[in-house]
Image: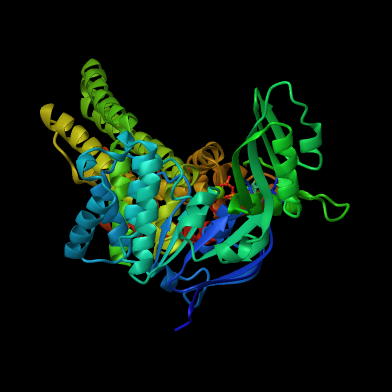
Length: 325
Length: 262
Ligand SMILES: Nc1ncnc2c1ncn2[C@@H]1O[C@H](COP(=O)(O)OP(=O)(O)OP(=O)(O)O)[C@@H](O)[C@H]1O
Ligand SMILES: [Mg+2]
C-alpha cells in the first residue's frame, strides 16, 4: 500500500475555447504529494487553479500533460473512487431530492447495501446537523445547508481520502468551526483530508501541510510553521502623543504610520534600536500604549507568494484570465 | 453495474416526472384523440379510419417529439448544472451514466406511449369500433420508433447543445421516416446525386420501418385499417431499432467519455 494519499506530478491543463481560439493555461506544472493521515490545505487566490487541480484528480477533466495518483491508483481510477469522498465546489445536487434521498443515491453508486445506506445516511444527516431539514427538498436548502448535504454525500462511502473544494464557503462562523471540527475528526479517524480554500485562518488552525498555488503554479509547500517565517518582521508600536507635538523625529524610518488625534501607530524595522526610540518618544512627551513584535502570518505569506507569482518572469505574459466559459 | 445504472435511471425518471410540459402533452394527446372522434362523426363511414389514423399519428408524433425534448435536455442539464460532478466522481463509469440516463428516458417514454395507447384504445372501444391486432402492432412499432428517436437525441446531446441536438435529431427523424420515398425520388437523378443520397440515407436510422401503414412492405400494400404487417415483421423491425439504439448509445458513451466537465 502506497503511503501517499495523493501524488501529483507535473500536472498541466490548458483550457481551449474552440470558437474564440483562446487558450487558458490553468495549471502550469503542478507537483505535490499528500501523505496519508494528514490534513492538507490547498490555498490560493481566485482563479489560481485549485478547482482545476481537484477536478483533474476526481477524473472530471483530463490533464493536458502530467500524471497523478490517488491512493496509489493512477487517475482516472474507478478503484480509487470507491475509497474517495468528494465535495464539489459550490455543489448543486438534484433539487427535487431530500437529503436522505441524495445520500441513498450516493450510497447506491458506491454499491452499498440498503441497510448500510439507511444507517449511514441517518448518522451523517445528524453529523452535519440537517435532521430538521430532512423532509425538505434540496431546492429549499440555503447555501450553507447545501454545503452540509454535500459534505454528507462525500462521506457516504466511509472514504479513506476526502477531497473538499472550498468546504467552508457559504458557511457562517459557527458553520466554519463545525466543518473545521469535522475535518479534524476525520483525520483522527485515520482519514486523509485534502481541502482547498482561500481563507488562511482555516488553514493555519488545522492543517498538517499547506501548498500555496497561484497562477497555475505551486508557490510554496510545507508545514504551516515552516512556511511562515518565524523571524520578527517588525515592531508594531502605538503611543499617545500631545496633539501639538511634532513627530517627524519619531516616524523617520518607520512604516505604516498612522495618526488619529493624539494616537500615533507605526511599525519600526526589526533591527531598529527600540530603546533609543522610546527615549526619544518620552522626551517628546509620549505615553506608550503598546509594543508588539510582528511575526509573519500565513496571510502575509499568501500575499508575498501571490505577489511573486504576479510579477511577470519573462516577456510572454500568458497568465490565465478570470473569465469563465 | 446494474445497480448503478438502475439508480441513475430511476433518478432520471423522477427528474422527468417533474417536467410539467409532459403532463400537457398527455392532455394534448387525449384531446387529439377526442378530435379524432368528432371528425369521425362528421364523416360517417370513416369513423374507425379517422380514429385509428389520428390516434396512431398522435403516438408517433408526440412520442417522438417528447423523446427529442427529453433526449436533448436531460443529459445536457446534468453537465450544465454540474449535478454530474458529484455523480461521475463516484465509482460509476461514464457509459453506465449514459445508459442509465437513456433507460430513465425509456421508462418515461414507455409510460407516455402506454397512456397514449390507452387513450386510443379507449376511444375505439367507446365508439364500438373494436381493436384489431393491426392497431396493437402499430402501437408496438410506434413505441420502438419513439425509443430509437430518444437514442438519436441522446447521441447528439452527448456532444452538442440542446438547440443543435434538437435540430439534428428532428432532421434525422424526418429523413428516417421517408428514406424509401427519398430513394425512389433520387432514382432518376444523376449518378453522383444517387450515390450521395445512398450514403446519406445509410447513416440515417431506418425509422420508416416503424411507420408502415400506407406503404408497400414485402410486395404487399399494408394498412392499419386492414391487415398490417405480420408479428414477425414487428419483431424484425424492433430488433433493427434495438441495433440502432445500442449503436447510438455506444457512440454517445464514447463521446461522453472524452468530455471535460467544468
Ligand atoms: N472551462 C474553462 N474554460 C476556460 N478557462 C477556465 C475554465 N475553467 C477555469 N478556467 C480558468 O482556469 C483558471 C483556474 O481556474 P480554477 O477554477 O481552477 O481556479 P480556483 O483556484 O478554483 O479559483 P476559485 O478560488 O475562484 O474557485 C482561471 O483562470 C479560470 O479562468
Ligand atoms: Mg475553485
